[in-house]
Amino acid sequence: MANENLNTFWANIIVEELIRCGVDYFCISPGSRSTPLTAAVAGNKNAKSIICYDERNSAFHAVGYARASGKPAAIITTSGTACANLYPAIIEASNDNIPMIVLTADRPPELIDTSANQTIDQPNMFGDYTRFKFDLPCPDENIPPEMVLTTIDQSVFRSKYSNPGPVHINCRYRKPLEPTDDQPPAGYTKNIEAWTDSTDPFTKYEYPEVVANSECLDSLADDINKTDRGMIIVGKLNSGEQRKAVMGVINMLNWPVYADITSGLRLTDCTTNVIRYFDQELLTGEFNKKAAPSLVIHFGGRKTSKRVDEFLDQNRPDKYIIINNTPQRQDPIHAAGAYLKGDITDTCESLMDRIHLSEEGDYARFYADKALHADAIIARNIDRVKFMSEPFIARDLSKNIPENTSLVLSSSMPIRDVDLYSVSGRTGITVSANRGVSGIDGVISTASGFAAAKKELTTLLIGDMAFIHDINALAVLKKLDVPVIVVVINNRGGGIFHFLPISQVEDIFEDYFVAPHDHYFQGACETFGIDYYNPQDKKDFTLAYFLAKDNAKSAVIEVNTDRNKNLKLRRKIKKQIIEALEK
Image (cartoon, rainbow, N blue to C red; front, side):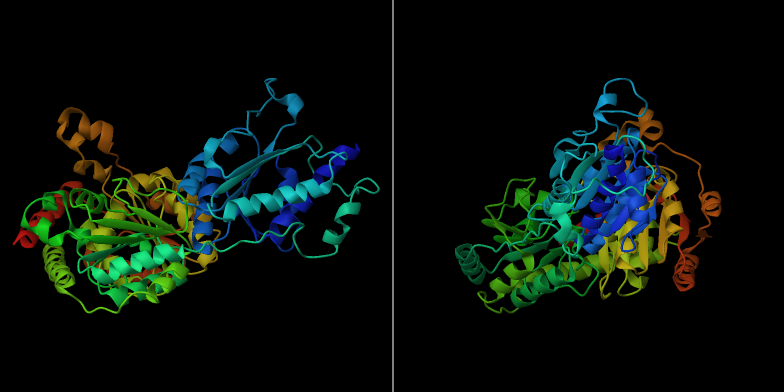
């Protein structure tokens, strides 16, 4: 029985080594084969954990946690389809460079391909979406424990460094699975005695800084100092330090800026931009000539707005430089002439030492003027309609979300509405969204993980289809020590499809794409013990949000809207902006 009794020992050192490497938050879904790992977490006083009944909830919770904290969470699942439910979140983490440690329990090799219950081919199941994978054998006294420790150390390093993302360790166990008090065989731990007596990882990895090439910075600074038609694009930024550094460059240059909603700058007093008001109709004509930049500098991750790319594709700048600290190509229009790979904060500070402080020029004033016109049109139209519109909800939230809190945006219309209609002026709002692959799955779970890491009020704006997709994640909200206010826009279907060409195919559009439903969510909130609000007009919505915030408990605010009315309002706003910008 010596080998079988090592189950507990191996699981204990796996969990302990993860904690020593800075991974101390565990997302656990109950299961039998993962018993050794779950028991090890439960028995470690330094481990923090959350129990998620659904493995998909657990994985997306880990996505949100890592986005907010900058460090990976560990996911523990049993074998079989439990592992498969992690796949969407692993893809999101991979595409958005989110560190994640996946520990899947598995059957021993003698049960593989035998029709044994709950047994699938697990070691390679996540394909190329993992940065590192390792099929850990069943605990065996012939395998030294230091191999287990160095595997964990390598996994954490690969998850965090250079190209962050998920790693997968498949952990095989034979029965018995329950914890035992048996000690490892005599002499088994002799090579890890120093580790046992310390609090350090067995193998320490140094994380070298990635610094942008000095000659490239000199060349970029020279181009910046010569141009009078420069534009800054800011994609997703990962920290307050990055935001502060990018703002330093923005303030020195006084160029027009497209600050993506995920940059964290969009809701602040960031400098002027109207690119968020661009639309396909603006890609021709006199406005196009005046708006085109000669130099574009793109800081950070990808952009939410497809229209910005369309504009730049038809008005290709002489130079387009992307500055980011990950190796992925983020250039769907293939316009980038150079990538500067380096820490964004350090790169910005190095640039500021090389560039000249400039006054706002005609090009920037052109954008500032157009921004004022577009903003006035949006405000006038939203204020005039009596019904509670979706643009109003996005705008009202941007005005009233408490400063120094978090905002999570679902895919489809919520993120687009906040990008298009929100106002600036708030301080310390951290914005997040699942834009790796822009799925609508796991959004509530992601928000719960974000709140758990930030330890502050988190507001989630989500559509009804995404809410239904992740409705059992309300159980996770109940477990949190911090409140998540879920604002769900219920227009009873997929509203975003109205903006796609398929909307013209009337005989199949409504049933097969909008997929209308007649669900309301009060009953679900009662089931999960979550506070519920259902405001009927604009004033009630603002009041409901303030009440939910002041109650300091997780809540759902369900807003029932009319898809057709909202479509007409959006089109009216768009038409008026186009007319104003073309003048």
